[in-house]
Amino acid sequence: MVVGTIHSLGALKCALKLKPGQVDILELRVDAFAQDPETLLRAVPKLQFPLLLTVRHPAEGGGATYTLQRRRELIGQFLPLVQWVDFEVRSLGVLKEEIARSQERGVRVIVSDHHFKGTPSLSVLEERCERAQRCRPDVVKIAATVSSVLELERLFHFLNQQNAKRPGQNSVMGMGPFGQVSRLLLGSCGSVLNYGYLDQAQVPGQWPAEVLKARLKELEGVR
Image (tube, rainbow, N blue to C red; front, side, top):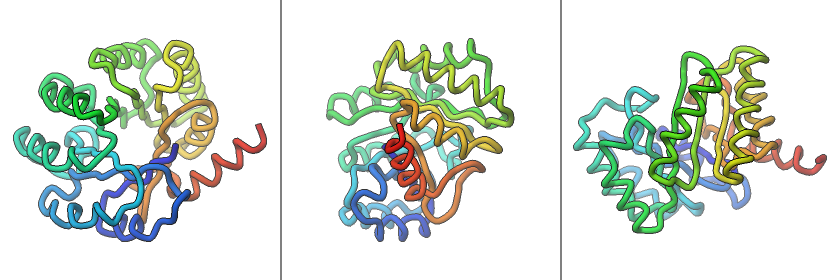
């Protein structure tokens, strides 16, 4: 599945124009709207796709600096409106009540981990994944900056390894110089959630969401 990310007013305008089939899920990056969540709340009924809630930690690319209490408030405000929700590995302890509440409501939980300075070793990736699994999420998401073929190969090996253990529960992608290549490769090899941007990229190496959806469909057709 391809996730289109709403992280700005421009992205929200693009999301409102999407046609069925252009993406599979829309991610509400509520952290980017923390100062004015009403704008996003008003638009939610018009978004004709399953919705993924993300209130990102500032240290992992969050669009705002706020208190833990404010994060909790925003999660509580948007949780009744979505089918998916994302929590970082680093936040599993402090947001355990929000995770439990999400699971009780039947909202599918993603636990994510982001590495902006490079691709960690396989042992580190495995350790982070094991930590993510402690709350029994539906999907574990790993994103890492990929600057060489060796790092790309490492992510590919990691995805294959995790899919052998937990098929259909892994989302793996690259950022940076090999980001676009990684998203095609890993998306066609079992990464279940594959993120693209709407309007403007958030990080280097992303595809426009609609283009990513079309490319992955093309690759599916030749396998």
